[in-house]
Length: 191
Image (cartoon, rainbow, N blue to C red; front, side, top):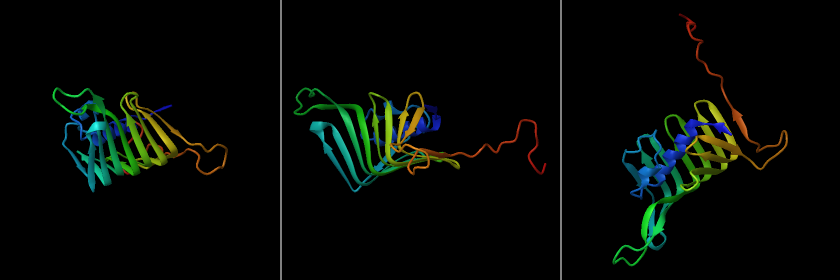
């Protein structure tokens, strides 16, 4: 596993952005992307199924919070199902349990971009999984694979693929650029 702090911040920010329909959304924030900022959600339609504690934002769904943006064809937010409130007919819905972003998932902040076909966040395991043609970009650095698993709390991440063997297309691939910083005490060119 590789420690990728920016990806864990991305996972936390995605979780916060997708959890916007829950009053417990702030519980998913783990620092970073101003989790106290208002969340602006938009889609072609919203369907809420109270009996299942499910909210589905469908049709070019987009969530904005501070400088983070999440887009997907569909955003599904599953809340914990609790016992009915006194006098209530259906279950009470608690904190966010699971979040799914389906179809053309795109997450961007000023520091990074992650693209994939689908993404999910499970609060119990604190795992975020992005699947499909996954591309993660930070600056000029690019990482590609079929599945990215991010352990949100620890910041560890894995990029995986089912393709095995040298020279086969579809293997995990990264292109990384060396730091362009000058060694300490050495002036930059032209000084």
